[in-house]
Length: 66
Image 1 (cartoon, one colour):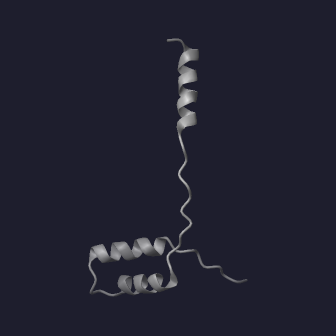
Image 2: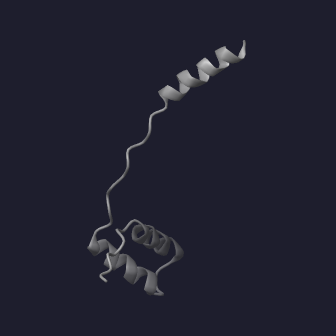
Image 3: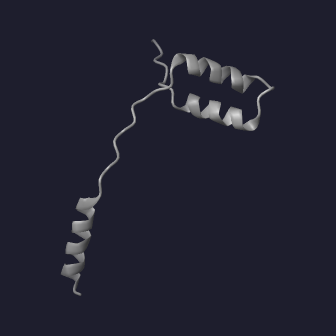
């Protein structure tokens, strides 16, 4: 197999790769509020806080005025 054949194979495989769509969903304000309370409340465990932090990480950034 020569270099040209290898390159043709690589290009053919590269065309087969499909890109995943972008997930544009955001966490709702209601869920953000509950997640914030879970993170600040000492009664919740590590797993609950991990899920809450994940929800907060998926929120839309605040737009701050000038």
